[in-house]
Image (cartoon, rainbow, N blue to C red; front, side):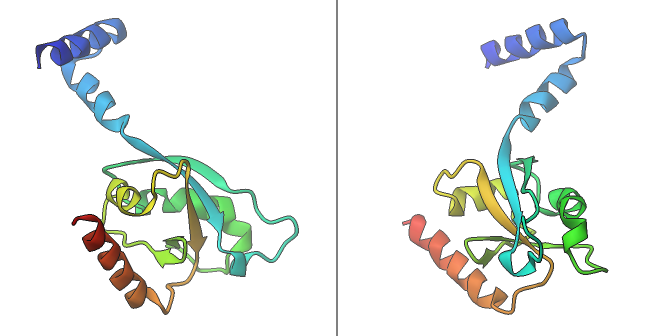
Length: 141
């Protein structure tokens, strides 16, 4: 309590910022290192495109990094793709679940967390989400 508040005051005094920005800085430090690679089925060049390394906020969502992913892989994706899908080990990731929750459920501590970027919604989407739900339920007991 008091020690944490004091650390915010010390940090803020050094930076010359108000109390609110110190709390915001502390919040945004909760990030996950991601390694984004283009799905193997989409790679048509040798060598393949370089992966994208990015920090994603734990309380954020995957669409927040989709713009950077599209920029990284724009020369390798079909025209008209504006929202890629993200997968982990073949499991499509739901965008309405915070990135930190997805990481905690699926990654087993992998760092950086290696995700695959795909321009198409997988047909197996429903079955993958059922699998994700079973994994989540199994880990909670």
